[in-house]
Structures are given as structure tokens and as C-alpha cells.
Image (cartoon, rainbow, N blue to C red; front, side, top):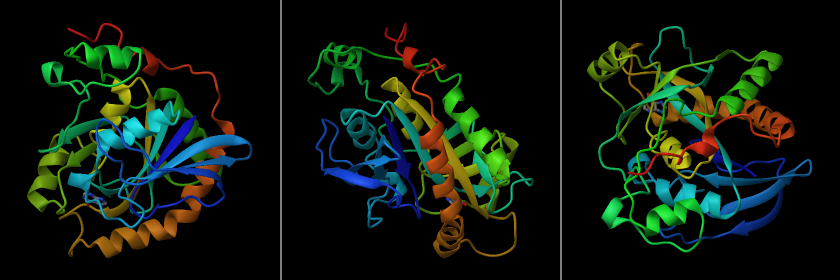
Length: 277
Ligand code: HPA
């Protein structure tokens, strides 16, 4: 099943026929919101609001592990995340979509793995993930291709067909937040190869991979990053742009749900092969 994680400005999905709402507890705590299980044109999907439905969780305190674990628990094996980002690359303008293909991690205080060796949380179950946790293994997961190539390709096809302005690749720098960056930080990130900056894309992507789930992210450039255009950055500006893009985001999601093939052509599911020490 596909799971959608909605970021700033996307707290619910209309067009979704709601079948059930699940409030879960996980071995990694409570997720930021209940999970809405619903149906779009006969296909089941799960929806989770990353910041909570009332936006109570700031980026550095989002329970990323609980969120990804809870989605898996309800049967999600592919996650599509929607995120607002600041544009660093001068070719990326507010309103553009970016189908990111790599990340740079500048977060500071987040639990970014399920596998903590001798400190691993013990879980129920018999699958590979439970086996690795319960045997307290150290696991190094491969992220040579962190975002699911099959999901990215479908996003590109849809954006191309719809004629929305988009960039088929981009490097996402994740900062700790909750403050915005300084112009000096953005200059440094640009030199390091970042195209966009956000506060929530990491560790979500890696946690999904650790559970052998597919993960792709559709980023919406909400503002030029700090120092790129004159003036201050505000949450108002980000939310206003996301509001303007809401209809297009929902169109993309709907088409994505319609067209995502059941059969996987990617290797995301092989993430744990040869990963344990
Ligand atoms: N920086 C970090 N996160 C963001 C930004 C930004 O400029 N815009 C939207 N999310």
C-alpha cells in the first residue's frame, strides 16, 4: 500500500474516501498524528500529517521513527512525502516542483536509525527487521540511491504530462531548524552541492530504507532560501505558496495513486541484504 506523508500545508487529503482512522502506539513512540486509511478510486492508501494535523510538531521534534514504523504497521510499503523547501539553485523558482535524488544531512539531534546495536528496541514479529532488532545487530544500510527510482520516474512522467514546472533531480540539504538558515549557511550549502533546503526530509528517507520501504519525495519550492533574494523569510510566505500549490499537489497525488504499478522494478526491498555487521 502507498503511504502519503503530508508536510507543511498538507494536513489532509480530500478526494480520499476515508475508511478508517488508526491511532497507533509504536515501539518508537506515538506518531505525529493518527493514520487515515482511505481509498482513491479503489486503491487503498494511508495518510499521515508529518507535523500533526494541527501542526504541533516542529521539524526537530517530529517523531520520525514512530511515523515510519506506524505506516509500515498498517501495511505501507511505499511512501510518497510532500515537503516545502527553500530554493538554493538559482534555476529553481518558487512554485517549482523538485523530484530530489539525493540528500545532505545537517541535522543535529534526531534519532536517525532503528538499528542501535546493543541498545536496540526489542519488537514483536518474525521478519528480517524484527530479527535484526531483537538480535541487537549493527546495520549499515546502503543509500547510494536513496529515493525510489521507480516512484521518481512516475512523478516525472506525471509532472511532464501536466505541464507543471519541475526539476527531475536535485540535492536536498536537511537542516535542524526550527529556525531558517543564515545567508552564510545557504552559501555554504550551495558550494556543497545542495539545490534545495528543508528541515524534515531527513531521517525520514533513511528510516524508510531501513525498513525496506520505497520512499520518494516531491518537494515544492516555497521561497528563495535565505540571502538569495532580498528580505526576510517567514512561515507565512511558505504556507501561502503551499496553499497556492495545493490543487496541483492533489492532482499529482491522485494521478500517482492511479498509475503506481503493483509490481516493483526497484531494489529498495533489498536494503537489508548484506547490511548487518
Ligand atoms: N529553509 C528550510 N526549510 C524550509 C525553507 C527554507 O528556506 N522553506 C521551506 N522549508
